[in-house]
Image (cartoon, rainbow, N blue to C red):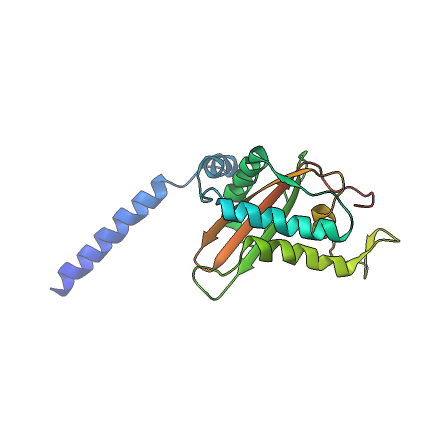
Length: 187
């Protein structure tokens, strides 16, 4: 009986390894192509769209910047980014080099599913306002981060779209914007 169970276990493991090996990409480029066409990010709901726009526009209104509007193309681009970034969980930075502005949020929560919301992601970026010195147009203290906030309130941005991926206790949010925040003052 023990030998039979052991043989079943070995056979079962061998089958699983063969199945896994068949799905392992041969290169990073192949993995990125596969991820770009997979969908770990379901479309955001109407309520989530509204929450993203409202949270951004609350921060923008506080500094006198015109409100943003939702854009489906930006949402599509954000979805591609979420699918690409999600396997790396919270160890990612913006890919850069593209024409869209981008903010990334990764939350890890002990609750499953995570209790993060679109508004809590945007609020996390807006908290960087306390590190932004408008007069010097820099983050203070030196070395601190305030670029996510500058992207949220960028006066040259008129549209945004965001995507969300959730898994177990993690939530990844990517928002894409019409224009990248630049070295210029955001407002």
